[in-house]
Length: 396
Image (cartoon, one colour):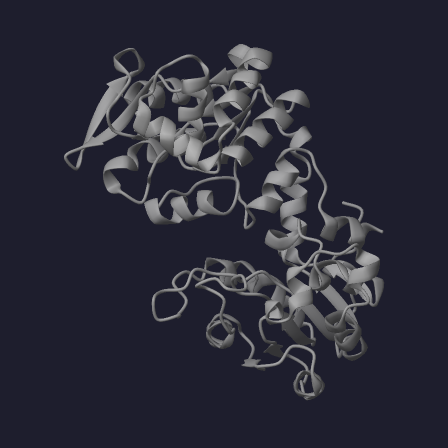
């Protein structure tokens, strides 16, 4: 991997700053609605504490101005329950109070510092050299002996707490970061045929992934579904109907044009839906492509598409999933996601991108994959053969 890990760190008695990504959905009361990302970091934190470390945890929650922009006191309480060692909470990040909380730690104790994004610098992106000179890094670096970056889900962002510390203190990859890089960073070494299933409503992201993996010959086939699949259907010359087309154009005005260019360039390597499911009077109705346009938006793929994609997965060496096949939050339109994701497990190696994809797995109770990423944007960067700022600065 070319970067130092916890295997290279002498922990006993060392004060370690650990950047994690526990940015989680909150319910209407502001309480944690899903603690999956906290669970992901339990291994790294328990290991450091068990080896006698004094651990200062850095994390963010939400975006400034957003509904989920909040303090981390609930996160600290939940980590205290999940870990085998005590975790306290400090409502400061790099002030005198934060220093005192860190310096008072004994071996095997941790403190979760306040939301890093409460400070404007942390929501901006800088080159590592400039990030190392921000208030957050300059004022925290003197009270930690080492830095561990376990925040893979934020590794694509060049923010101070992600890329600044390695220029100030000895720095290492945590176990989440290490595991993600071992799998996603070696995507070119996975068995072929390599099949990417791209769905969801983030059409521009899916188009970028499709273009990158096809151009770099990482993908032998790209299976499209969700709103992304609808865009490719329209690009293939099918009149999908005004409701579906308007939904696409509201998301991305050039999506159909961009998808058409990809179809012209890569043709048969891109698979488009053979049928869709629409909502009429609150019920699921399946429509073949030959019976389009529909007077209602396509919210899922139909059984012919599910069967065709399952056949592709039967002979796949690697299946890579990013984005649900439909509006999985509604049970009537979760069938495509359930069937396609389930079929992907037949591949020799099955990998799931993070974000909405992982959330759909949890909601639908689908498991059995070789790797489920903790990151969305970061996973996409690696799955397309790109690099990550957090990893490059650790390597350097």
